[in-house]
Length: 374
Image (cartoon, rainbow, N blue to C red; front, side, top):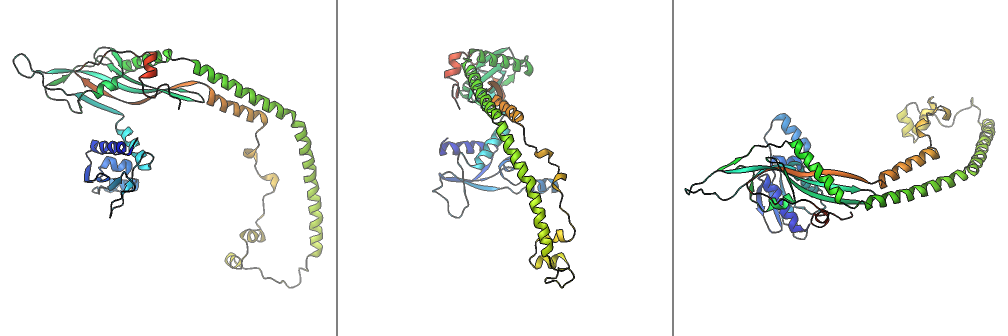
């Protein structure tokens, strides 16, 4: 998406909410955000919670967006909008939130009857859905489906979105138009869409799943070989741990002998002390003493190591670690299919879309992003 396309998208987004453009320039524009836009991209949730709670008047947020970083207007603090900007991602999320489902009516020129007068024109309800079918393994492939379902008479067409772009649509029903009843329920329409998705998947080559399972078998074989070699080395590791345990057992004896020597070297407790202990914690800290030493001096005992609960820090066994890695490989390589809803709408049309049905060649060539490894 180029910078000109970014600006066109932002302008269309703001025009949808009837935002007031304060100043428009080829390199930037200043806009006064409406309430819905401010709540989505204004980044001031505490302000809105305070306004809603106190029932105060709304103070609009005014922002200046620039699309060329080298052309910065003087006296303003513009924000550079580009495809990777955080504010641009917020605009995308807001557009998806408010525009995931719409209701539109087709508007044509007035049709005249035999007497030269306008006559009423029926509008047929259509359910339009844009779906994304994802073929997932260690690679990803997306197939986009643009389905249109006639809710007055059971009928399904593909490439419905391209047909809508050729029409003039309005959010309000025009004069001299009326809508037909819906004889097909939404649940029945969804079942028709599901059948179309299954038909599309049947047309696809299933070799991608077989190749993914082959790669999974290879990775599992490498994993098994690694842990078999690790099991052969376990006796050597156990011998090394036994030697380390013996060394740790000798260390307390040496430490106890050092403590006995230190006791003989301690000065007489009845004699005068060279440093007087601070009375309070503040005096001790002011003298440069450590907090831990102060706590130990005043009877704070350390917890013995054997009393510390170390159950949650227990090291995983080789079998547990191997099973965990197997699960990770299965999640990464096991082929699976996900179907997600992008957006859709209810469209009342007087025009009739061409009756087409998806085929293998159509799904591979004409659908955007199909056949593309991402």
